[in-house]
Image (cartoon, rainbow, N blue to C red; front, top):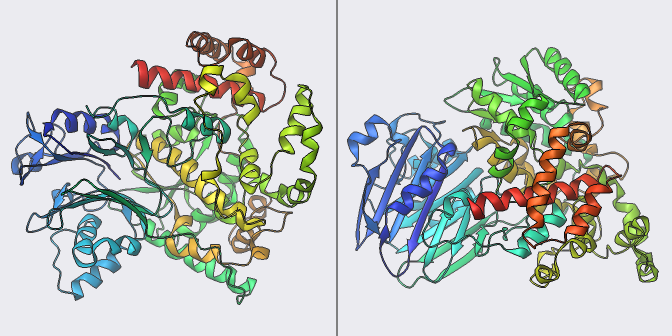
Length: 632
């Protein structure tokens, strides 16, 4: 739901053109309404915008040429309380506390009841008002009470501070730019780049982690001085002296509860998932479940029907997804739910290729089918879509997880890498394998991006000198068991990668993805279970399979894990227009001097394995990213 933007100029008032253009850059996130709030010289006022509803325009003057120290912008995707009473920025009764909020709070009804018992009255049925009054009652400690996905900005004129907060998993993005001149924030980097205090510059450290992990590890981005507010974090800015402080309001617990049986764990997961689905189905607009044909999303669909007998489901069909589509159709018939198939053809991918790649704000190593899934939902009138994302990280779903025990044994022989001196491709892969000293390295290897050696090989000497290749700051507990891997999967695979991609994909078409597997209580429950329940080194997601067994057809349970993405390597090999597209991008990139042209040619002409296309595509998407955000 929605998009937010804002700035705090430390030393001078700046033109409202900044907030207008920031808000316009993220218009796709909220086409239903917009609003503004400005603060200058101890005075504050709300404004409407060109896309505000008629009733909002009657209530607030249009924002034209104003100046302010602080400005808030908001784009609305109306999902709960569709009336103007849910309009933002929302102000307290005394107009001394102001909030902009992107997301959904699933336990807002429970919080509202608690606040009503404390004497609070409500003028809307929106979750935004519940957050606002929760802050008035509990201050910053209210963030720990919220179960949902959110990026929140609160300006507190009473205590003279501004607070930025992000949900525990990082399902809703929030980026910021910090300098001596001020602080600027927005739901997408596109918004930040419209502010006069922000200049687009490449952050090569961010590009480095992007190439290694297929995503930039938070809090870094590929833009210098632009950061991602980390999940479960609060950033507080003192309005009297511009001091900025950061704190965590939640941490993932890795301490196991050994006093629970596997049978009881299955029952608890079943119950908690039911509660999560029930809460996340709540909306004042149509809701659908996106089924990939695998266990995760099909399980959600099966458990949704008791709460919504008319639930809609759909599946995205693309080359080589025939088994998934067949299983999804079988499951829908088994549950007795409405089901449709969204066919994504090669032509559609090609027509929108450049635009969709450039919508993402960093290089990427895949073609994101979720954009097509979001477009289909939008065209069908679904503003809310339940997704199975998060189950792989929470329950150990990725195939490379099964290699963990072997790696823990093989790492004892890592000294062998010092005996390999040849550039032979096979031996280079062997050397890379025996260079995985830490759990962090094992996790990096599993992401199938470029290797550190390949980045050094492709980058020009001048660029490579700018990169800090020491990534120890990203290391977590380094527990030498499944829990250590789980920690990296949750923070970097899920928070930095998948839910970030989901959000950009869905919000491009004004659609909200929701994640029943990522409710507070379910995450806490699974994280505390004994490792033997969750990981056996033989089968992925053993615990989730046992939980889903009584709900799903056997065909679904037997389905092997497959990634939900367009088969890019096949597309490159068999579509001349795609190869021409790549060649054009690489030729353009060669002229920039960032990467070695001879190595680019070597990689492009020597593709053999199914993974060779990944590093080529990373270079192609780097070029398109550079064109979009630096050449405009």
